[in-house]
Image (tube, rainbow, N blue to C red; front, side, top):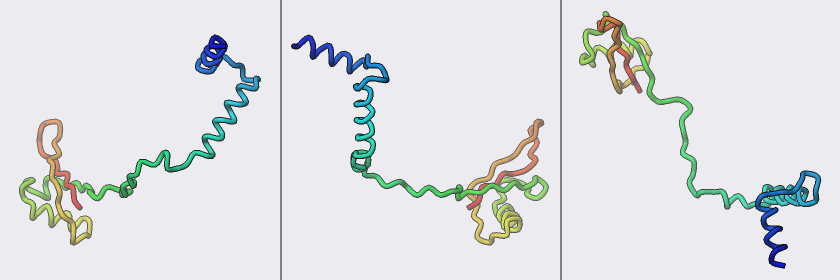
Length: 113
């Protein structure tokens, strides 16, 4: 009796049944029952998904080196950004130099909010 039970458990664990057997049909029915009758709470982790904005709140604007003397001239950069974007409430988050192959400053990349 124990040998038959162990053989059956081994067959189930390693699934030695063909697709056209009643064991296969029973497995399919069990899978469907699990899919459709499992409570949603079993898979709910209790955390609400955070609201992810569609777009990043930070935008980038590129200014030519002729327009702004240096990246430390934030007043001039802010003035140029507001003129380009038409947003009077634009706030500078970060400024990076754009260099050409020779190491010469060709512009500034400005992150704004």
